Length: 227
Image (cartoon, rainbow, N blue to C red):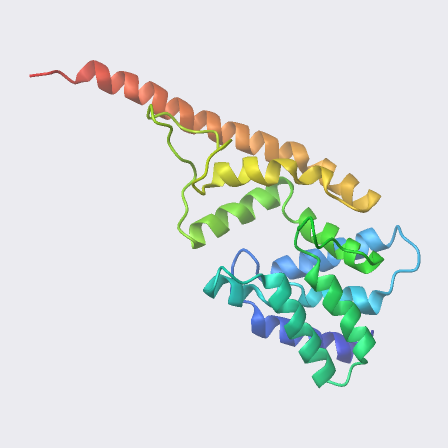
């Protein structure tokens, strides 16, 4: 890929980013993760991979404005339209489109090409470890969702089985289980290196929140009287 082509794609990406949890730095990390993974594999088409990484989240703004939309589907269409409008071969644009379309985890829409699988793993890698926890907290703040929910007895839920969205619910529903969903050996290895950081953060945060409620409720009960 020429520097001119890279700049064209990068500038388009920058014009589309409007989300601090899925910002341009996330895109760059995904690209760099993808290059690290690709280095361990043969026959990677770097022109497709780099373009797909740069453009994979350009549909985020539309999904944020309308949660019924899928940013992967929107972004794949935008990428194809942009590439073909700027003279790229339609088959190349289609390959990039497919990578973007399948980078979001869906059982019925899994990545097929090597480049699509690398993008998938690189994107998921940025949801693992300490970085994944930090990004999730930022996103929960953006959409005004709480750290945790309370159980009927007033204690802090650990997130398991919760219907109401929260940081703990997101951890139990998604973040805790993401480590066995990688396609590449390198991606899985890098994710595993990060796992303990996420586990420790969640456990510490839950323990601190739960103990505050437990100890505080007991002390408050001892101070309140009926008259």
